[in-house]
Amino acid sequence: MLANYAFIGVFFVAALSFPVIPLLLAFLLRPKRPAPLKLSTYECGLEAIGDIRVQFKVQYYLYALAFVIFDVEVVFLYPWAVAFHKVGLYGFTAAAVFLAMLFAGLIYEWRKGALEWV
Amino acid sequence: MHDVINHLINTVFGLGWPGWAISLIAYLLIATILFMIVPFQMLFLTYFERRAIARMQDRVGPNRVGPEGIFQPVADGVKMFTKEDIVPDAADKWVHLIGPGIVVAPTMFMFAVLPWGPGMVPFDMNIGLLFFFAISSVSAVGLMASGWASNNKFALLGAMRAVAQMVSYEIPAVLSLLAIVLVTGSLSIVDLITFQSGLFISSSDVPGIPDFGLGWFVFTPVGFLAFIAFFIAALAEGERTPFDIPEADSEIVAGYMTEYSGMKFGLFYLAQYVLNFLLCAITAIIFFGGWQGPGVGWLYAQAITPANPAGNGLFNVLAGVLGVFYFLAKTYFFFFVMVWVRGAYARLRIDQLMDFGWKLLIPLTLVNVVSAAIWVGLTKWGAADGLAFVEGWAPLMRWAVAFVITLVMNLVAYFFLVRVYSQSQDERARLDDEVLERLTNVA
Image 1: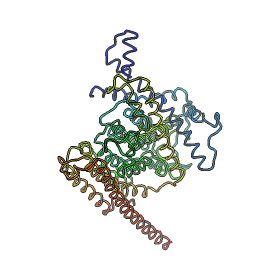
Image 2: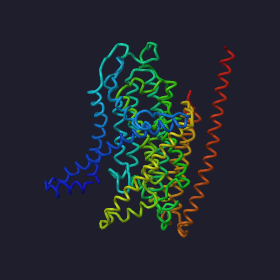
Image 3: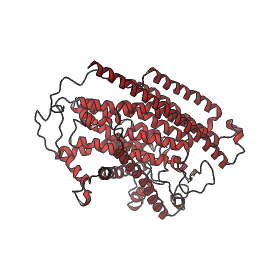
Image 4: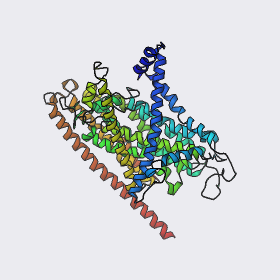
């Protein structure tokens, strides 16, 4: 089994080189005539004001935080799911408590307004 | 594959190459074949989508290049190659260049574990499903990189939206698959498919069901709810209408692709269609049996397999052709549904999108996980697991009881959660109206 993972390595290299080939081919085929106006930032005809590296809406980070919590908990649940045919009622109860806590966390977040887009 | 090449090199040509070289050649050959099929398919999918959506919108669609316009995607490809590559002065040149690469490479990498037919899988990984979804989320990094490097406000906004949407809908997708993993007890995609033999009832749940290759998960209450949730999440992951706010052209031009042209833009386009194909394929595999269908199981039983070395090679070909046909038919059907949804629904607002994912899909899929656990307990467990009372029941009886209980659970959860969700949406609309009224009074 472990030796077969060499396939994943070969495939990984192949997948990485996949976007390189068309980019190289396009590099050889395409014209290159830069002009100052062509290279300016696209802003619907008006000149761009200021930089984009500014403070950004915090709502995105709240969702990202909630995502991290949920995703880690889901990753904890996967081994349980694979072994579920063997864990018995005890394993079911333990995971049910875990799921209940996850659910309570979701409700808490909801009631606190962390899931509201403002 | 490995054996065929080994035979060719060491027996026919008598070169006597070592095993690892044979393996390397076999692996490279598989990768090359896959990477030639995939862009070809993507061309077909773009043409299909444009013609189908045109028909739904009472238009004709592309019909000039070649008969009925079938060479339109080829013409588009030639255009992509010969268009000038415009990199804005303000952009971060290197990150701008590697952004599309980071988006495309993972979508190609995901093909490593995708089974096409019986015995036709590049690599039957024991954690294939986990691998598939772990790799799929990597492209969010590429989207963020390209949006950030473009130094354009539309691009940054589009990238932020894309990442927020992808991470939000990954949770319902992974939770709905968790229910399926609970039922099968395996993360291997090949095992998931073999589990779905039978006739409306999986032969793994009730032994002795005749095998017509129709024991799909979608026929169980658990699988059905998981399928609905997963397909909606797949629409969001693939940035399809009604979840296409990252590239909402009427609001933010083209989102993270705004500052891209030529082949770099082409790579984004390619990645999107390949991802859509993969999501349709994984939906077909997990909930609709992949290559399972009437006849495939019987044909494959006669074929040469590790379990049956004395089989007939002709049946390998027949089973393969029929299996791939079923698989692709299901996959293209789901792609058609994606196009259909695009023709039927308007784009959501970002707050509606987030609310739908977090307040409806996630609780629903969490309940579904518990339903799946009950399903397994009722169909598979015995006295040793602490469920002595099901021991004496016939398998069909156990299946029926599990079906009714999980159906009731999922229905109650569905109606309750939809009510709570629509109340919260009404409340939100009321608050919005209040604010609007106050603003108009001030004016």
